[in-house]
Image 1 (cartoon, helix red, strand yellow):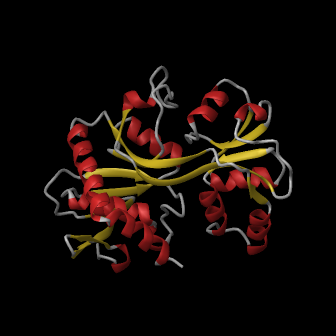
Image 2 (tube, helix red, strand yellow):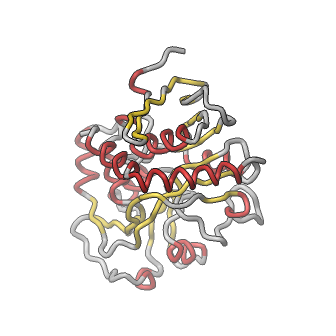
Image 3 (cartoon, one colour):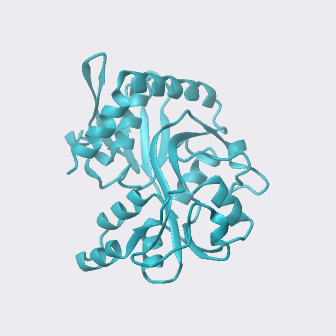
Amino acid sequence: MTTHASLNVGYFKQGKYVMVQGEQYRNGYLYNKSGDKPLLHLVTLDWPPYIGDQLCNKGWVFQFTISLLADQDYPVYVEFLPWARAVKAVESGRADILFPEYFIEDASPSDNYQGKTRRELLALSNAYPGGEIALLKRRGESDSFEGNLNALKGATIGVVRGYQNTPEFDAMMDNNEFVIVEAVDDLQLVKLLVGKRVDLIIGDPKVLRFTVSYSDLAKSEKVTLLRGLENVEPALRYNNLYFALSKAKPNWRGVLNDINKGLYLFKNSGETERIIEMGSSECY
C-alpha cells in the first residue's frame, strides 16, 4: 500500500515535529506500523467536527489520538463504524479501544450484554476536552426550560440510539419520564425535530449543526434544517471526552496507564490545546 500524504499525522515533542505515517489498511487506516508495542485496534464514528472519515485531517480527535498512541510506541489501526457497532466491537473484545466516548455512569446498562453494566465491560481513561450537551428546539418556538428537566416530563424528545447524554437525563429516560423517539444518527435526529416528529432533541449543538453541513443533502435542505434549529438555554452540561478500553483484552491495564501518561504529557506541554486549535483552523 502506498502512503498517502494526507493520511500523515504530526505532533510536537520537546520542540521537535514528529511525523507519523499512515496508510489505508483493511477497513480503515494503519499508523506507526513499526511501533514496538502490540497493535491497538481502535473503533470510532463520524462525529464532526471532532472526528470524521471525510473531514479535513479526519478531525482533531483523530489527530490527537494517533499522536498520543504513536508517542507511546503503539502501532494503531483505526476503523470508522456506526456508533452501535463500534460500541459492540469494544464491549465484546473484538477491538481494543472505543473513542471518543462520554463519561459512562456506573449503572449504565450494556445494550449488548443483558445484566452487565458498560463499566463492567469497559475501562475509561482520564478526560480530555469535549463539548456541550444541550436541548434543541425548532427556531422561534417557546420553551419552559430553565434548567430543571422535571419541567419536561411527558415531552417527546429525540435521542440517538446508544448515545450517553447526561446522567440525569439518561436516568429519567430509563425511567420512562419522557416520550423517547430514537434516531440512528445525528442527521436523522435533526430531521426528526425540524419535521415536527418530536418536541425537542438532545445532543452537542456543534456536532448537530456540523453534521448537517457535512452531509450529502441538497443545499436547500441543509439550509432548511440549519435555519430550523435553536439551542434551548441553559445547556445541560459540559461533557469531557474519554477513551473506553475493552476489559476483554488481557493487556488493557497497561494500555490504560500509557494513555493516561500520554494525556498528562500532551496537556502539560500544551500539545492538546495546539492540536485542537490546528484541527479547527486548518479546515476552514
